[in-house]
Structures are given as structure tokens and as C-alpha cells.
Length: 177
Image (cartoon, rainbow, N blue to C red; front, side):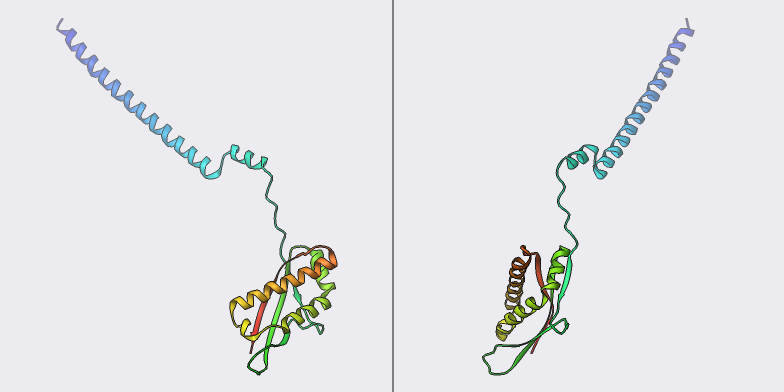
């Protein structure tokens, strides 16, 4: 009988060691699952999931904008600039040199700009010579002139090809004296 209590003590110690080993294994598995699950969640979050991709594919894609085409507006002699005398109240001559480009996104419009360049140059030249020197010294005046030039070229394109076609007119260089 003396041996029996010793066996119970050994069983309790073995049971205690087994339960602590079992607890360590369970804690290790739980930690492994949390780390693995967190990594998988982060991967899906950062790279996107299949559900999001299929939802995006179901929606119509936004139209891709065509590459911009820049056409230099050239004078009759082929010079890429306008030189005009500006209106002024101070009785002194003032001049403006202006490089102009038309921005479009359609090759047919760029071709029409080249075809109708004499008309475009003539009308832009008339517009530029009617400007006041003092007005063009301000940023607002320059912006208003650019908008007027854009509207003028759009009107010509509407008249000639049936659509405005030109996105904007750009002044790539402007010198006044």
C-alpha cells in the first residue's frame, strides 16, 4: 500500500506535465492560425480579392482617353509664330510674338487643322491684332485671349468638319514689348 500513494503522485506529475504540454501545443496552434490568417487577410486586402475584380469587371470600364495630338499653328510663310501690333492708348507701338498650338485627340481633327491652316491663321491674326496691350499684361487678359482663340478655332472646325474637335489652344511662348 505504500507503493500506491507514490504511483498516484507520479500520475499527478505526469498528468500535470501532459496538460502543460497540451496547453503549449494548443497555444502554439492558435498563434500559428492567427499569424497565418492575418497574413492571408493582409494579402487579400492589399492585392484585392476575386470578388472585387468580378464586381469591377461587371461595371463598364471608363473610356480610355486617346493620346493628345498637338498641331503647331503656322503662319502662311511656315513660321511657327504670330507677330502682331497691339492696340495701345499711350501712342507707342507695342508688339506681341506668340507661338500657338492646338490640342486635339483625333487624327482627323489634326489633319483638318492642317488643311484649313490659312483660314485659322487669318482669323487668329485678326483676333490678336484687336487686343489691348494693357489687358494682355495681366494673367486674366492672357487667359481670356486663350479662351477666345480656342472658341474661334472650335467654330472654324465646327463649320468645316462638323465637330469642334479642338480641346484647347495653347500659347507655348508669348513675348510683348
